[in-house]
Image (cartoon, rainbow, N blue to C red; front, side, top):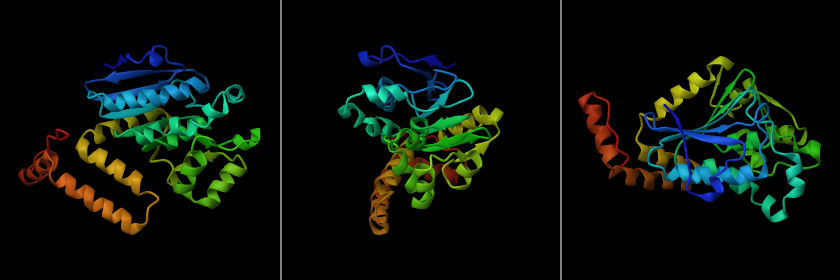
Length: 268
């Protein structure tokens, strides 16, 4: 059964608007937004997200991380008043904090239902997998406030869907339906609203069948080569392949294949 996670870092003694659970049996950690109905994200919460992802990245009990929310909405975005109260220096760190799922070496899944706006969308874009439901709506509505996305949203979205669609979404504060998100390659999977938890559990279980080392390597390679030239991406892939060639997990995978059994990966 999942149990609440406690942290030694004094900055994480009182989590603001979310909590963390670990299920050692499934090697899974859940970051759960718990400020319903809209799960508005505060400024301190952004800093804590970064610290929590860094802690979970070092936790040997955890193989896969899920970020989800209580209630019918993932998050309607950030605390608007908080932007005016934060210093320019603090605001300049927004993108670094929200990029923590990308920097995390472990697979990160965003389970999105209902509103997923502003920083809620940006945080989800920084994850490796996004599962949406029929009720999910994505948006970057900052233009309505006389602002632009400040936590990497427009940049990540442009890499996924191109400049034309990104301008349409950002410059018109346009909402993206779950079906559009899936069709455009933003969402990994689209399911019925009642099936979100089941689909998330299934993806976690699938990811656990692979080598932890191969998963970490694949994630870093794909992130590092996303905006590189083809020749550099191929070169990096070759080096990563060569490194994994020496691993126990690769040897185990090959032997299991020939012996027609499931591999027992150890992550080394």
